[in-house]
Image 1 (cartoon, rainbow, N blue to C red):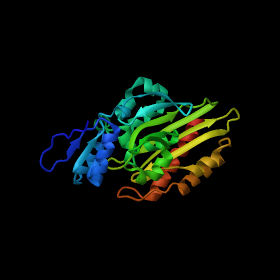
Image 2: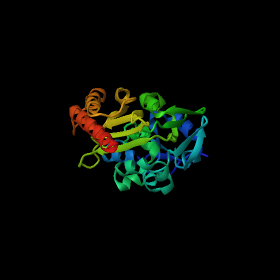
Image 3: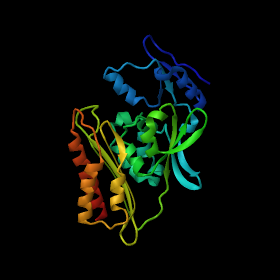
Image 4: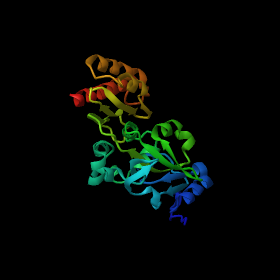
Length: 293
């Protein structure tokens, strides 16, 4: 059932559907004048800066498919499913979820202030396109479940990042994190460098997942980075550079240079692109070196 919420003059009409199809139809009806909303923290910061609200807000809070978390089989493989409506704060504190994905709690602790984490959702952070959680999920090979108005389909987060504009009308239902295959040694990290100024974007967020075989060679590697309003990137060239090799000082030096070449951040009011390249390279390589021992 679709029901508009109460509103005052010059305030948006709030629609509260309880089905995916209804939410999608409302979005088609209003186009750019209708925006999906969950926690609403991003919109609140934009309004605080003087941005006019849209005429219609489409709340997704009642849609059951977007809630909860658990284990699911996807194409015969086991994944941890996290509903798009799960808050950052929940992901930081739920003990069972943290046992499955320990790095998630560590990463969420660095994202936003506590008051925002209480309302901000995993789905909103990803759908925004520049959320600090995206590098973490890219490093984990996350898959998204999306509703396009006709059917639910799966798409890798990496593809979603690259095709986000064409998928802007789709509803993000949940995130799937694949269970890892056991390895001789594993490295997982998430680091963020931010500003002191309130409501300013982060300088750089980096994340990595690396597995080694019995010969201490890198068997699996994912590296991801974002910076301020620069779209998140997977560092594919960097992954190819070190996959299949044991770590060495020479290899790590090459990795520093390759990160600076592959990561293409933008310059903003707070930091230059060159500075972000250096910060990203230093964070990633120092974490790999520290955790590899």
